[in-house]
Image (cartoon, rainbow, N blue to C red; front, side):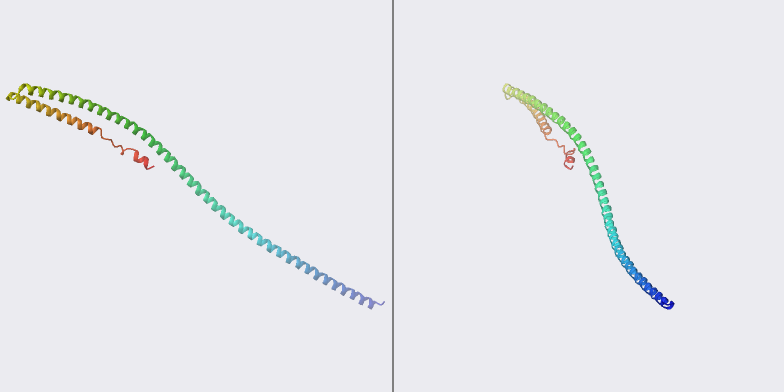
Length: 196
């Protein structure tokens, strides 16, 4: 084989080698493009997933902040209710103390009223006894004195005494009635208790 033939064969081998390398290069580029395309799709998908997760995290953060605000509001309401309850307990305690004082005062007033009624009854009985005695004396004097002028004067004096005794008796009776009237204690703490 001559040199020319060898050169031709060598050039042909070179061309085949170049064609083979070009083909391999194109194939490798296609594989790289496919890998890059796949990676881009995967990256796009991951970016979408990350965006979705960030969106979900944002919603969770909003819900968390909302829940925190609601919890704070509930705590504030609970503290307010606790304060109101303590105030009401103190108020009820004061009202109980006032009620006991009022009960003692009522018992004392009832005792005084009973004593006054008893005293008025005793005075009434005494006056009725005196009135009866004077009436008996007047009747006796009237029988003894007859129709004389002196007897008339004496009878008039006795009648005057009887009228005075009757007046005193009626006054005592009226006082007993006044003392026996029910006493109103509505100006004390009872209306306050109803308003609690």
